[in-house]
Length: 466
Image (cartoon, rainbow, N blue to C red):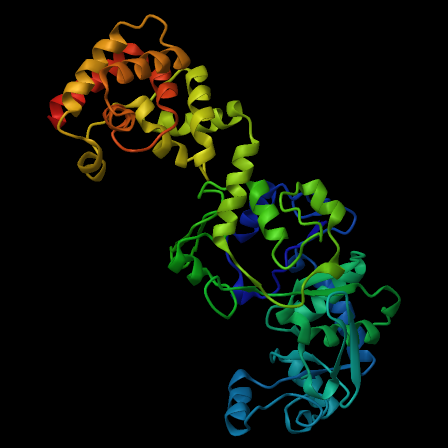
């Protein structure tokens, strides 16, 4: 895999974007074999640093009569578009425009010598069927009459446009496959023509135009606004727009694991045909096949993305998850023994989609409840709950072996002997210790909290709830 920075459109240059791309790929575990940040035999890899290289191919096309110089100003072009509906700069209109095909050669030279700005346009011959052999869509044929004479080079900044720069670089860098979104399919015939014009048909890359990612809740292409509206990231990492100052949320900062994001994205519009969904990077590399990519768009199910993250969280060892969770505890000024955190994680991680969810699922292990869930109090705290909880505190105080199995045996025997309802006692017990109707097995909780803390919480609940 080669990383090339396509920065020939100076008007759209975004400071910081290159470093962002590199950092995002590194986070996702997508290794770069050659290119920016790595180096290689085809350097430089920023197109803005390859100006002299492109110019020789511009001259080659001009000398062969396969391209021409055009002096039309933006205002003149806009005027033409306003006067002619669906105006296209092509074989039918180029004779009416200000270019080297309509001006005398000495005037063209004089204009260039005095510094007039110009562009170089490819000369497309009309009414020719151009066929693109696409690995996903099969043979796609487009008549050249619908193509305009695209700009290949701009004298204003001495840079080529996307069309010429990519064809030249793909050829010289020995790119085998050009994989891009389906919105670029109309430009593929132009690239085929350029390969032919430059005499490079012997090493034309294979094209594959991927389907669009669609909105989660309707038709149309996925956009950043959909993420903002529905509350999910569409960027790999947080991105702050240097112009607007607006920050877009990223999958990394939202708590996703990079391997979960890769797995999730890889199965949008493609699957291995085996029914498997959890696939490592190596498995994806081994099984991926462009011919199996769907032609139709893939709906972006962000809830499925959470499911993938949940699965990868469960696959991690308790020790690894505990290490990650410790960062959240430290942020809350909680310093806790690592073995205790591992034990807690083993009890609650099944309920979590993200590492950040672990705090909500386990906060009662680290902090006694300051308040009690109102709905649970109304439903679970009965008239006889205070008496039962104080009795339970005495029972627990008499237990020497506070292990989960033994404590459960003693408490259930006490409930049975007293004729209390098991559900009523245990629900009030959980409310007293946890503060809500949630959490793992009750006696696993008391084992971690210890006898003194459990009894203290029972007595506090009676004081607060009455």
